[in-house]
Length: 185
Image (cartoon, rainbow, N blue to C red):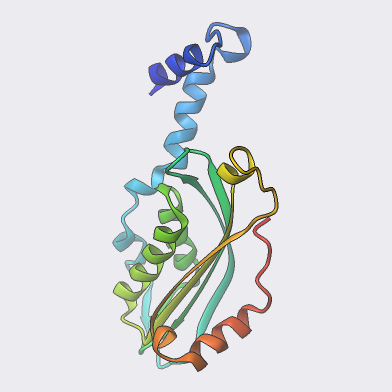
């Protein structure tokens, strides 16, 4: 990757031997390894030992989970908040594990729509709850820095599974617990 970044610098008209750029190829390589480390994360290992038998069957909501991801179309960041709810069916998961699942999917080349669905499906698979809801609000630098250059737009996506899809009252309760959706920044 270091050589690719070095060649990129040459192709955009820069001198990779310039003092400020000498270490840039290795720094960018290290950064992209971190930005995309979600490919090496095993969701089963995140969840392992963190699902507990519990008689609780009321809604569990974790909101305002910060995330940072890379748009797979332009390799520039998008970032924002993820909100998750599930209706347990005799099993709950440690709250921090939900945030780790968000990070695992965010740290891959992504589109927001797929990331929303992947998070919901992972929780549904590991918990077999009555339902799962995921809402993501994000700002996309590909829209802010290039193209239409819209600085204040926020994309919102949702995936509703089980009771959240089938029951309007359950969906309404979830959205009321979220309150007014916040700006991504």
